[in-house]
Image (tube, rainbow, N blue to C red; front, side):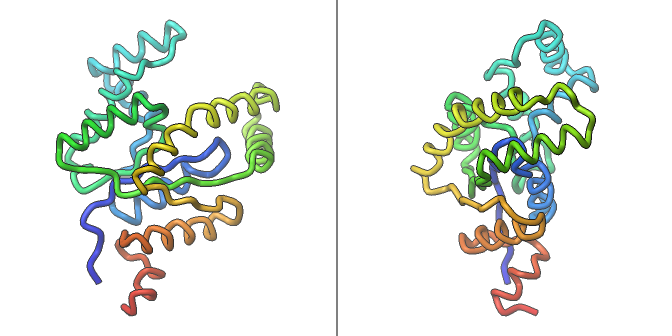
Length: 211
């Protein structure tokens, strides 16, 4: 069985959908780095890079990191050697401007996304999960109102992004309700149907008739 030549993915889902956990599992299975914007911000700030200093000044002022700087940080990360064969993006792009920035960067390298994994979770389920997580982590500031507002932002900002990727035929819709393993299996099965096979994916090997 031949493995996927490249694996350039974006994982999208509302807060509480489990996309962070699933993103790690998919990235590990395909042997590519998970690239999360929050991690990039922290790494650059901690490392004292020039980009990190700019991010820190913006955050300390209580402002949001602008699209231009966010895209610059992501491009810098994707140019690192471990992302040469692929990556899994989590948290970027968040809006149409960032979608255009990413497409411009990838097309300039003769590359493109292979799939956009959309984890579909009902709003009520997300709220229940987030409320439980807040209790488990002792986060009293995560009220139901705050959680609902976060989900509203996701629905408002992310829907247009998914529409763009649907037009390109890249979106793989996954039912995000179920056990961790069930959702993971759904993702791998859907990607395999598109010819995207994870290294060491037993389910994929069985479906291909390989022991």
